[in-house]
Length: 236
View 1 (cartoon, rainbow, N blue to C red):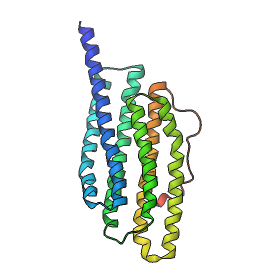
View 2 (cartoon, rainbow, N blue to C red):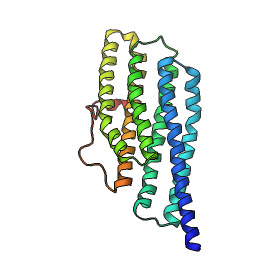
View 3 (cartoon, rainbow, N blue to C red):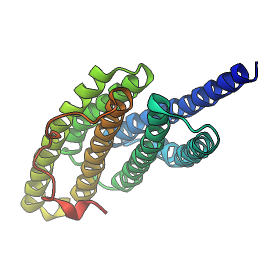
């Protein structure tokens, strides 16, 4: 009877950990969606809400880490349970960083909203949609333990990289044509870079899902566009 109770207790703690990750993922997904909306619609009120919600993601990350430490210390899990717990630490860290990038987009959008509209802001809409779809799909892959969908996300990251490269060059050209656009376009460049980094973190999560289910990382070279190392000035 004691063993049965122990198993049920362990399962309950694992389920709680998964619930925290899913709650964190849902909030992060909402933040990314709203961040893109803020840029496109110049919605300063929504930008403020995104910034205010960011600490909630941080708190969920702390809770997930506390749960994983407890499970590792007291339960000594093995096999897929161990991989689930270890991967949860990595996924929660990726989600926290995605939340930070969404908040950064909102902060820059607030500055943009004080400037005259720039037509190139519309190009962010398409990149934001693709990035959001990656995040939505990888979260769905985690919830349903769908390794095929996780691999699909892993392969689609290159599309985000290519869009970032295109936007970068477009905005640079626009700045050279009219120096009055430099301030607004610089903020848009940082926003685009934040979206590109969100895509990278979604890809990290896809790799972790594959490892959790299969016990090994995806095979082959990780898909990448040509941004790596080319525009490092926008990593900060």
